[in-house]
Length: 419
Image (cartoon, rainbow, N blue to C red):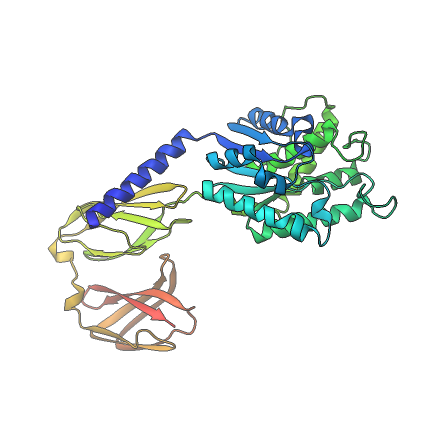
């Protein structure tokens, strides 16, 4: 059974690595309406990315006037989502609905949730990204003339999109918020088409720059792709898009993007016995190879070698989206350097503990060290006593290792649990 599990994990890791190698191109799907297809926003974003040396593949489905509820029922949208393999699926609601309080609770949010569920059902590694649009030039054009303002509508759009993005742990591209800054600082740059709510090319370019900064978490300032724009205007739009995103990454949830795991580990050695401390990030599966034919799937395994010499310890950390491998070499000395814990006359009590612990040894304790599960040294004491009392209140609840150096030149490592 253990051998079967090892082969299964190895196969999964191989497939993940193969998939990653085949899909080094970032794949992005836009689901929107005329705000997305005006001036071909997906293509403008793609050209910005290519000009920055990025590899991207972009598709879209954005029929005019469409809502998220329409995409939930649209066979083209559903088919594209079901195909999976998307790194990002961008969702744009109709221009007014996110600003309607409380109508968005019934007209938008249930369908945003449904699409997000479909996206992750097709590919657990896909990332939902909401397209915060801009307010109409003079406020909501669907309301009585003079009863709304641009600023009021933009604030409602921000809250409407951010509420659903936060609830789904999805990211948010703050295109409308960058739009607001441009209106304040560069009022001569016309972002609107003649109807007062669709984007001009400058507006589309600003949105594309915002998506670039959001997806790549890099500034787009200085990008050479500036079609149909004056150099000064293009730089202004690039700079504001970059600042809007990068100055507030946590606000827009961009830190939730990266599913890549990173393998790392440390260890504490006591002669032939090792305590391996897993330091991998964003991993849920672990495959340890100890270099002598034995292995473990534990997160923090301990292992005692039966032979001396050098051994290569390999850790494969993985999740549903990625895998990473790290190898370190360990050395076990000859018989004179081996320490057998079972022969040591040392006791630590109580363990687990809520306060004081007591150490008692037949051989004088010369040095005591405490490290956490990450291998970080937290406390060290030089002494020459057979009995010690130590207060553990300075330690947070958790598991720790106590390394003890005895007067006879041997070492011991004990695990304690602080409650």
